[in-house]
Amino acid sequence: MNAPQETPLASRLSEALGDAYTIEGEIGRGGMGVVYRARDERLQRRVAIKVLPPELAFQDEIRQRFIREAQTAAKLSHPHIVPIHGVSEGAGLVYFVMGLVDGESLGARIKRRGHLPDEEVRRIMKETADALSAAHAFSVVHRDIKPDNILLEGTRGRVMVTDFGIAKALSGAGSGATLTGAGVAIGTPAYMSPEQAAGEREIDGRSDVYSLGIVAYQMVTGELPFQAPTVAGILMKQITEAAPLVTLTRPDVPEDLALAISRCLEKDPENRWPTADALRRALETRTVTGYRPTGTGWKAGRTASRTASSRGATSERPLRPLAGSLPARRSERALARRDGRSLRDRESRWDADKNAKNRPPVDTGEPAVVQKTRAIFARWAAVSGGCLLLNVATGIGDPWFLFVAGGMGIPLLRSYATLWQSGYSWRDVLSRPAAHDSAETKLTTSGGKLPRLLPAPTSADYGLGLPQIQQL
Image (tube, rainbow, N blue to C red):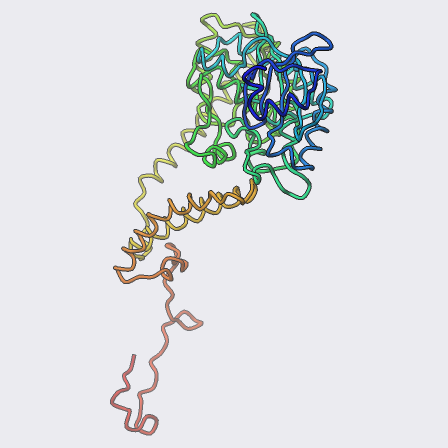
């Protein structure tokens, strides 16, 4: 018996498999389980066997969901999807048998080579999108597209996508429990779509398109678009920050490829590619029409891409009217008018922004320490509140938002100490400041004239208190 079979998990799996399969060794492991290389004794072929983590397999509801999703994924038959031969359970384990891919994962290739050539990126994106399109046609959403789940077979590196439906099977039950609550993260935060990061349970194929965009960005640049020291930080960036353009790091990338990746990474699913097949067709025809990135840096990226295209990058573009023809002259005049208006609009905005920056700060009459403490408190409340909502959405079992609130609370406590020493309190911070443009209120009569003086006080009215009465 081989060494992997001597481990407790391998021994239990060997017991469950019986004489049908012989385990030859471990291929890899992760949050979704352990994968072994095995030999199918009946059909005389090598296969891969993936085992659900034992700490999850004992939960009946998750086990049934895993089997059901694996059965659905087994119906997928496509040249770029790893086939599932069967799913079963035994000896307290749940496992499924799938085709063995002779090659390496995309993750291993990126780690070994850094960024990949543009045409290889295009091919891998196109073949992966083709696999996703076939799965989405059966209402199967992958939910965990990442380089480790994209296998490259043989010397050509044919794409084979694996682990369809597993993330959904492990995403919890209708009671609202999630696998995150059980201590295991669902999906991979660095590749999650904003709707996944926000904890939305109902997602569609456009979530996979976003994840494929993250993978494509990493293939082109050799790095991830969103990085942070904590999982919470990555999830927050996935939800709130616009993805940087690949041309800011790789200005030589063909324009159509850069636009295709940017459209995958739109935060709003409505702005992404409507289907994976639409993405595949755009990559195939090398045309991306009717789209401009909503993020920043597009002008610089576009200029760099056009320069790269002039150096030899192939890119199909819509035909323009023949120079000198009437349609061409009309088009040129229309573009000139549009560019003139755009330039004037931009100059007006720049002037307004410049004037706003040069305008002296408004004196509200409040002490500077009160204003500073209020600003710090507002920032602390906004960030801590957002993290709390995100923590609740992803499972409150691990209250990581307290670390964020505590860390940001240190400057707030320091500012409050200064506030207290100056003789102010939280009431001054939380009270609404007076509007800086509020007009002074003066006492006048209905006719707008100053009020007449009151009659002089007499001893008949005020007695002994007359000396203390003064006319205002």
